[in-house]
Amino acid sequence: MDSKEKMKVGVVSLGCDKNRVDTELMLTFMRDAGYTFTADAGEADIIIINTCGFISRARKESIDTIVEMSEYKKLGTCKKLVVTGCMPQLWIKEMREELPEVDIFLGIDQYPNIVKIIEDSFKSKQTKTIKAGSSDTIPYIQDRVVTTPNHYAYLKISDGCDNFCTFCTIPYIRGRYRSRNMEVLFHEASDLVRGGAREIILIAQDITRYGTDIYGEPKLIELIRELSKIEKLEWIRLLYCYPEAITHDLIAEMQTNPKLCNYVDIPLQHVSDKLLKAMNRHTSKAEIVSLIEEMQKQKKFIAIRTTFMVGFPGETEEDFKELYDFIKQYKLTHVGFFAYSREDGTPSAKMPNQVPEKVKQKRLVELVKLQKKITAENNKKFVGQTLDVCYEGIDYNAAMMFGRSEYQSPEIDSIVYFKAKSSLNVGEVYKVKIKKVRGYDLVGEQVEGE
Image 1 (cartoon, rainbow, N blue to C red):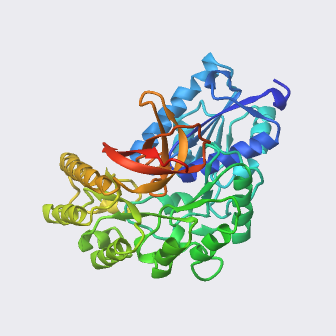
Image 2: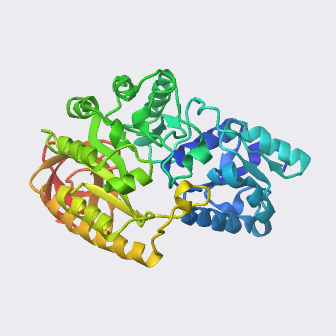
Image 3: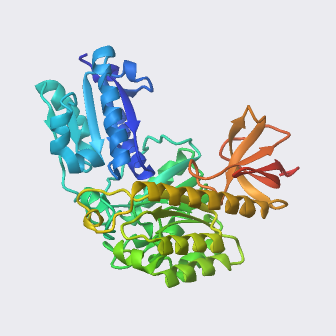
């Protein structure tokens, strides 16, 4: 195929929403160079797989996907198989040896060069291996391709991480913490809003440290206030805030800024001081309790999402009970659980007293069962309330509309089902009175006249 205008690109994006933004950047560079896209891998001339390497389960999914997509070099029209993301950044040598069917391995900082690298590969007909050091920040490009529904988009405000939790590979893959320029972020968010986004979701490995590296102090609140000036932007949502960096001022901003959702994602991981120290978390149980109690006493309800890890090396039954009792007492809004994964190259992999897999799974089941009861109890408190709900579509099986309130993040949280007497516009916010609870979800009716 001689003309790139005729070439079709298929993309598989794995892992977190930070990875999704990287995928959208690559798609934008490819689009601007004249390539078109297809959702059918069988008709793609170029297949790009953006991998996740956070834990062994994610790496297995990435490898399985690469092997699956490589079949289209035999059965489809694929001429170039491109593997990008976290895995080739850290495991390039192993991948090159084990996956000869891959034509291009691309490091995380080489996304702006993806077009040239692919085109050079077509010319040379040789495998091109790229591994970049994590030194550059994400570039600003106009009219970014968005893979989410038009009414919301993710804004990646930094890359890398300086926390060096003992269980985590991210600093070794993504490098040190690197904030993006505030003016660049404002322009990018403005572009996304012009493209139809009404909700901007701020993401990074740790958004609460935004600005410390380039401005000398945290600038998250200032960034939020700048983004709030964008006229048609309705909601700003915060994901991945480390507990020790959440300030009284940030909580106050949630309460007073009408565009900032009363919602925060705080990856707590555990509450045992012994384990928090072993994880190299920069907080304590007392500080976590103080933070949660402060947020829960605010006049306006704040939805708290978090994740907890079970089975970290040295976790005893007493440590687990301490975590169980904390969850039972504080009844957080949205909670995810995962079992510790022993990752080569991390300090925790060498720690003694590794917890058996059977024990991890038992503890995981207990916490999931507990949180299910808590969620049902929490949801009952919404019955009778009227919520602002962003309409997102129709569930034809349930014969109801559905959407999200400010207390629900897309894809990971529950939703609101509701009835409406007239047609609605996707992405617009409507008043919905909650009538009952259905599992994890809420059910209501649009308030007449709203």
